[in-house]
Image (cartoon, rainbow, N blue to C red; front, side):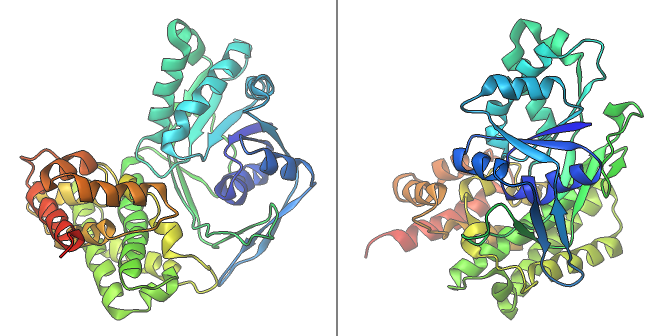
Length: 385
């Protein structure tokens, strides 16, 4: 069995690739980073270190890498003969992966079992997005090629902090992980992925994860950055920050109860587990890493505006989520392109235009004025005296 995984970075090697290898797949990593591809091909094994209570080391073998930038034909051939294709590249990069999948499907035998495609991204419906990109790239051949593949959405969760500069291709991760996959598209022929669980309805798992793990992680980063704290674990050691993050997650849990009928007691336990993970001192994770790309994180269907809009539509509390957005507006990291753009937009656009552009909220939406007020406050702070 063979799996092609797009994105040979830390999530690819330390989470998705690891579980695929444990399922018996030969793993072929595809990436555009020359040095990373060369480093992977220069070693016969790498180690995934689980840092924290209950953690262990996993030695990974049975992998190789191909460069999709310099050798797209080789990637297409690998996809053509693969059983599984996965991604961990970021939702905005999926459109660049799609042509490789199309090229592989064009080479794939019509008699082969359908290629099982799963996008493992921090986004709702990421595999649906990838499928749409495949359709667009395939053009007139879309129906023919899509008959050779099945596409299943997933929800993935594992904290992978910034890695030491001298770590090579080894990866440090937290012990906890979750990989939920919708079962329906496979028609009973499920991929062999130990530790993953297959569910009939993925939506509650995706939103529970996005609106708890991602919301809580980013909120901790933005409140921590505001307080001048460097590490995520240290930020949550601050009682004021911990209280603010907990309040935001209580609001997202209320949305999850209203939307999916999830049990409040189960969600309270889940929140506690998540916050304990963030407090893991063995994970040297920074507010700068977690807070990067703030424009994406305050967009319409992401971790703050998504649940806050749902709360406002249901007359549920959203004050703590709006407070997290306000903290995100203060995130000013010259090394992060989106942070630089965010601060530039705050200085050049009026509050209504900025709020519409960055959050995707309609001015008539009940959440809009509250977010706009947070924007106004930030802009007043930025004005010279």
